[in-house]
Image (cartoon, rainbow, N blue to C red; front, side, top):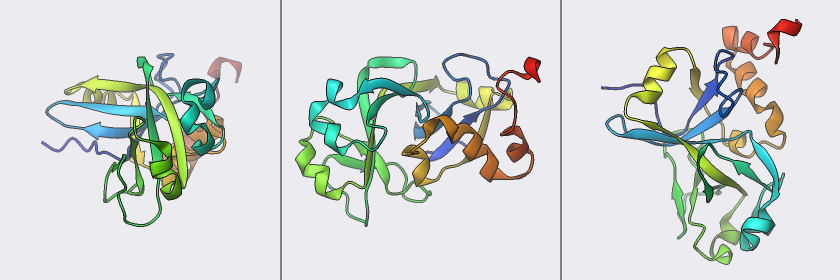
Length: 191
């Protein structure tokens, strides 16, 4: 059964989603198996922790802001990184997310690999603490309940220079009703 969820798509929290872990978040789907589950990383939750405090060898390669991002509420003591590469080569220590999407040249980085191995190949790199995860059918049920919009990603979304504006920017570029949702006030009771 095709549930429409694919690696490389974005999950954008609807205004109705008030879970503090996901309120106004943009999540990149990095793994999906309709018979298993889904794994993603929240793209717009920078922390104040510099990358060099947690992963010093990777700090010089981190795209600004060069801080750790909270990738989700699961396994916050584990880090994963996403990097964008030019060209078609797949260097050791990097695995592409999806060959057919706008984020085709974005992939997962093996943080145990020596940074010097990937440094010449990297255009951008971002490090995330934790991830978001859903069991089989859970994410589809949340989408059907109106918690998430499922929209195409652009490579620049992963490395947004102003992650605090990413939710609005992604919705705005969708056009139509979703562009209108991008103007939804942070607290509608004050409107």
